[in-house]
Image (cartoon, rainbow, N blue to C red; front, side, top):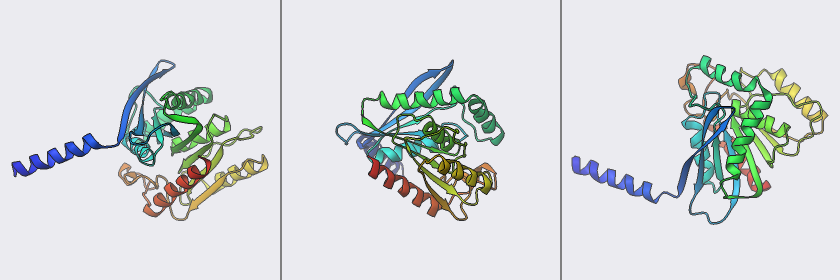
Length: 255
């Protein structure tokens, strides 16, 4: 048995050593907060390529956001999992997560400064091809991506997965494309909020694509959603698969 375990251990080491996906911790700061994001890329891809920034759920920069960034690298993009809270703030407690999120969103300018810094780390990698950049986010990160679009940050598109719906400013004329992937059974976002958001976007002539998943709740892309003890959080395999494909279709078109 020991020999067998040792054999599997050697195989695992060999696979890891040969793995094409690379990652690197990136340290940066904002208003005294020490931020640590993670850059992912496929070292078998030669030359520069499109880049995608990933913003985490309200839990903080945990393994799920990093996993999504790695999945993007597997698709051939350079990805950066940004840290919006800093100082190692990650939790699995809803009350604490709400506190962390409120702390950053209560100051809209600081919120966007921190998002812009994440985008800057991606661009500073030296692997991103020109202006071929997008931003995606989950939950709080989806709302962050929308705010980035409202501020016309230098991205071609933003994608929100089961995200919040901050309303666009009255004078908004968005340059980035917007893709919303929303669970129709998400109790955190009332239908009237979604309707109001659509009306405001349309009234200002801002184009967007909205994909709603019937029966899908909040966190539908996260296989671990049901582990947080909140009834409204539930994984939906079909919605997860389709939403990821919707994102890929958009990126193939704009990049």
